[in-house]
Length: 219
Image (cartoon, rainbow, N blue to C red; front, side, top):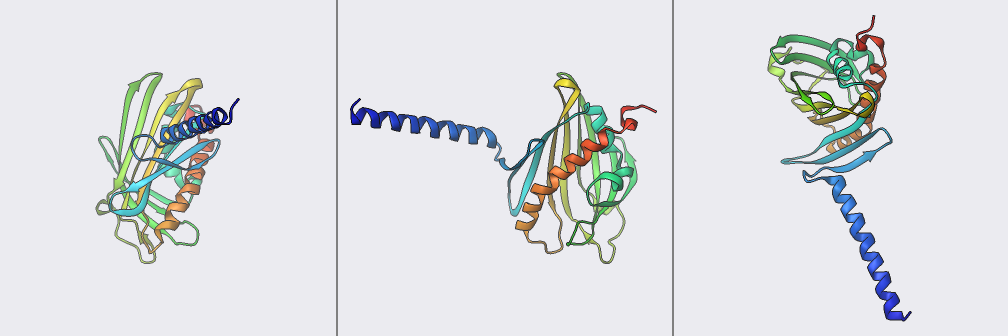
């Protein structure tokens, strides 16, 4: 084989490799700006820019070994959040609504100090291939909650969702999204970095809680 022919083959292979790599990267990003920020065997965390802010939106996708209705029961059991949700030390349901509830939470993450907020939660469900899917969406509603507490930073911006979809084997494809400004002068680059490690802990906590018999409707 001549040098020019060999060179052509090398260049062709390199071009095919680069094309495949770029296509794979673009497939990971999707068409809505999400890029992979952190990945484990159990959950993939994506981030994307948020217009007008240096804080990035986060989305995480993972499989939970329980049916969607079981996962929903865990997420709806806000009274038990201090027992299993990372950093949550206080929760209160302030009002029930036709499509959800209004709830107060206080969290105590390490180093940065306590934060609190009130959220309005809206719950949706619909039939889909394989059964039922459920979605809980929330956004800040501090005007519906208690007054600010001295020494506790009030979170003014927080919104997100849990989407629970059935998948093979009686399991759940869970998609968690969050955009939040925790306030209190925390550098945004630290907040963005913390989300990458905190979100997998959140999934692990939910997975563990789903194993309790009470969420299966058993005695």
